[in-house]
Amino acid sequence: MAKNFLKSSVENASLNIILQILFRIVTFVLNAFVVRNVSQDAIGVMYVRLLLLESTILFLSRDAFRKACLSKTDNHDWPKVINLMWLTVPLSIFLCLIFGYVWLCILTPPDITVTQHYAVGVVAIAVSCIIEMCSEPLYLVSQAFLFVKLRVFADILSVCIRTVSFVLLIINSAEKAVLAFSVAQILSVSSHVIFFYIYFAIHIRTMKQKLNTLDNKEKLNLNFPFYKISDFLPKYMKNEEQIDWKLLRLVWSFLQQGVMMQILTEGERYVMTLLNILSFAEQGVFDVVNNLGSLAARFLFRPIEESAYFYFSQLIHRDKDIIKQNKTSMDEAAFVLQNLLRSVSSLGLLVVCFGQSYSRLALLLYGGTKLASGLGPKLLRTHCLAILLMAVNGSTECYALSTMNTEKLNRYNRVMVAFSIGFLVIAWIFSYIFGSVGFILANCCNMTARIIHRRGYLFNESVMLHFGIGIICFVVTLIVWLYEEKHLIKFFRHNWKKNQ
Image 1 (cartoon, rainbow, N blue to C red):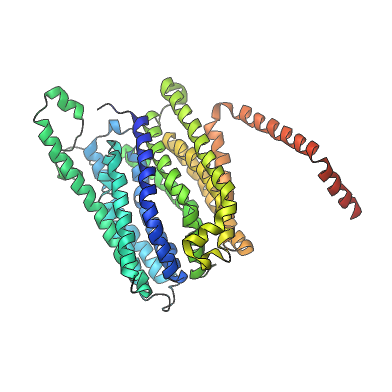
Image 2 (image 1 turned 90 degrees about the vertical axis):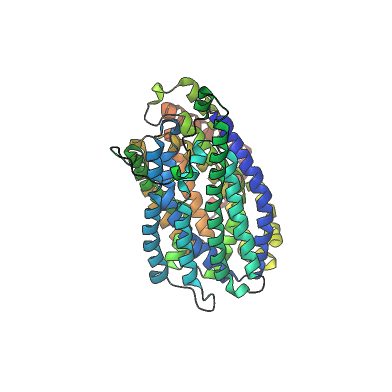
């Protein structure tokens, strides 16, 4: 089956963006209801403490497997790859036991006046993570064989069921919000997994009916190596290796990096949770503002980055030097990356410009006067700058991670360790100086450092030229500014001499 990866990636991103906007409008209204009717303490428990547990388990369980197994899918021995993907289930069980114990027995639990169902919430998150891992092989196949609409609709179904069921459960019992959250979590994840299995069962049956009408040449062109639903389950292969060991080594490289990436992605929540710097109410306000500020990232940047990662990983061989790559493919990849960066940076600049004036109005419409007063507007305005950096960082990172070989990934992992430690230290210091705004400022510093470091990788052949042009432009800009602002320079010079 001939695959136009660029066309599919663009279609995937476009469809994802359009459908996410449509269904996010509905969930936006429902979440506004939650913000207005549930206490900020309960929101802090659910959306910071419990969702941090989910994010930690899911990221460490599956992210490395997804990235490794989506590399050059044309060459996969699929039974071995399916067996490899099922390793996510025991890994998630192990992680659930470890982090479940930490969340229940080590971290300070919320006061009983906030919620009586904290332990139920922790158990529900752990169980839902294990259930979700049972659909990972099907998710991988949907990505590899360009089932563009399947994953989008599955995600929409999951989020809609979670949000609608949660709202219905808290209408008359807002004090039981954490219990309602737990029930909604199990329902949404279960529906997500069931949807994948039903879809592929129907697809395989339809494909078999179609095969009966095709000749042998047309059958080969279908190129879908799954003929029954049990092909997605783990199986023992006699006289063969049970998994693809080369991919497993790549998984290990991504897993090491994943730990650092998780700290960088959720660092502020880890600092809040582990050091108790903010109260649950303050954490709730921070999370609501952070989610509102991240709408652009979820609507636009994340779908674009996921599709771009898949596109670059299919076009470029990890284990070949750049001079040995197909020149046409490299030219196309460079062209796509250039336009991708221009697009997302333009969108990010729009957010920065308009976000400063309309942050308070957005919070007023979303959560009422309680959210729009106090620290909320300042948090959202600061977050607008983070969105711009997030756009550039995500696009450059998806290219770098989709094309690095194992050696470069390991070297990059060591750099990420330094960034992670630096970010945690800066977040801790800034949070004491600036409060919750400090977490956003620390994240801005971290993303800026990562973008600067990654530039050496993206412009490896002409880094000195690139650096030299930057220096020249900076000097010219500085000279023009000094010339145009002569009166300002004289003012500062005059006052400085006066104070001597």
